[in-house]
Image (cartoon, rainbow, N blue to C red):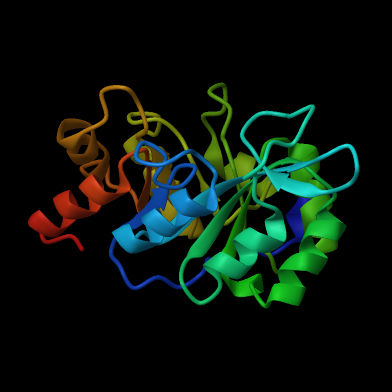
Length: 227
C-alpha cells in the first residue's frame, strides 16, 4: 500500500464567497510583492487568501520571497510577521519553497492559524513530509501534465486542492475532482489577465482563482453576481 493511500483529505478553510480569490504575492501590481503592504492591500481588496512564498535564510530565519536571497534586504517580512498580520483577517496560501515543515507548523500553531492555511507543496516529497508532521493540514499541489487519470493520482497523493492553467482539466477530470472533494484553484495570473480569462476560467467551472489583480477580479465577480 502506498504511504499516501491511508491518509484522509483535510478540509479547506471555510470562506464566505462562492469563488475563492487568491492574491498572488499580495496585491503586487500595486505595491512591492510579498510585502506586508502588499498583503494589507489585498486584505482591503477583500481576498480570501494571500499567496505567500516561504523560504529559509542561511541563519535559519524564515522569510518571504519568491526567489532565494543571499542578503536579506530591509523590508522583507518574516513568517511570524505575516502570520500576525493575517490572523483574523485572511487565509494564507503558503507556497512552501524551502523550509522545515516541523518548524513551520510549530509557528502556525503558536499563531493559532492552523485552520486558516493551505500549504502548496512544490514536490511530492514535501507532501509526504507535511502529511507526517501535520496530518490535519490541508495540502495542495500541481498535477503533472502527463497525468490523465486523476483517481490514481489522488490515491497516491491525497490533497485538498490542485492548481493548473485554464483548460488544463477535461470534463471527466473535473468530475473526478468533484467526486473526490478536491478543489481546483486555477492560476489566471498572466500578462493578458483580465475579464476574458476570468470568465473562461469561471466557465470551466472551478472553485477559485489565483490572480495578479485581486481588486479588479473581485469587482468583476461582484458585477457578475458571483461574490
